[in-house]
Length: 500
Image 1 (tube, one colour):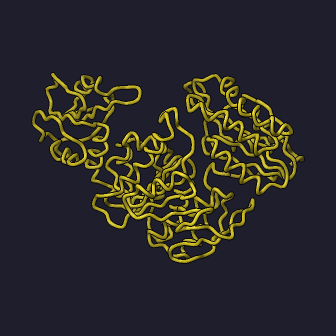
Image 2 (cartoon, one colour):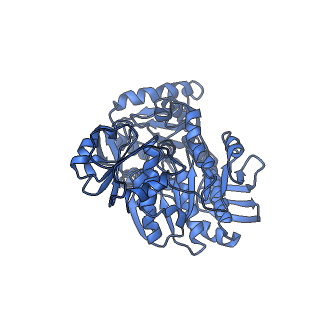
Image 3 (cartoon, rainbow, N blue to C red):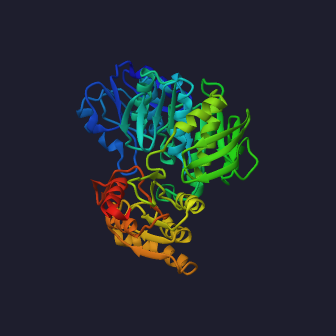
């Protein structure tokens, strides 16, 4: 493909400010990493959070770069180049064109929100496969292309990796791609070049304010998925929006395509009625635009009723019948790291969950409150080098809804774990004034904290290990070391021997 052909993808999307040289030069690969440049590559210089790609243009020239796309003026580059007003957005558009515009060959389902994205995408995949189609998945836990599973590098990968994954799905026969769309990805235009058919909004609560700075900025990033649905070459688009969330009504107002709303507490297009929750699962009647039908799910908690409603809305829009939906929902046993139970013959419940925001922790704990027969023992932490404002709020939430609270390390990264726990403790102390009967302990070592929770547990108790979910590592300093909450909990239970 020639450079001239590639930059046609920018028309109407990104302004071309300057052109230089013979644009008919052939391009055999695209990269925004100067270290990866080899002969015949197009290098796209992008200004990142920490590094400015424009500083590495000379290195890309030495690497054999065939052509350049830049956002800044360049001089002394003896190669074809194009200057644009937004090289980050251009990167995704160029990647899409280079890989054959893969999103135009599949149905594209994008799910965004603070919490619930992973579960919703997993259920969506199961429901859409009930239509007899191969479905690709891109999300926090894994990337899946047919039967092939790869570990996820990001919730939403970078522009070029995303387009390459989508292209592999097309080649692999996927009719649909279901993907989590993070606020970072939307703010950084990583999804540029993707045309979505359906966009889902789950909820919006405090998270990532180290990046977005304000809740309004965070919301505006999420909103881009919905305002971006308009136009393109696809028909039959829809937004599916949680109207119980206060931000949902704003998305409905600004959505550029038809909307189905879903809710438990508000009048909506999709509602759950006669909800029954237990540790074994959830049942309810789904009232939908095509009629009402019963749902039986292994997923636990009211928050999963929302996730199921969202996925049911997607499946109905994509042509699934109520019978297909019922059968597919019943086959979803669990989602990795989302109230994932650790069972080793013990007489108490142990569940690992990814809850790492105040709202997610409250959802998890209130779900446990409705199911408990004994005490709730909560182990949780807060990640380092991330939004510090949520730390005391999570501490307060843990005490408000638990009987025993053990605060510990999550991924401390480059922060002092004890400093993080001191910030969490501000909220803990505040909540203890209202609930002095709650037992509180601070155990910085996560393994010791989990083991202590298991030792504390008695028959009928629920032990919740929150914050890391599916992750099988801890980031301490700049190093990633193996650590899996599920493995540690299972080992601790097995060591109890006859006490279980």
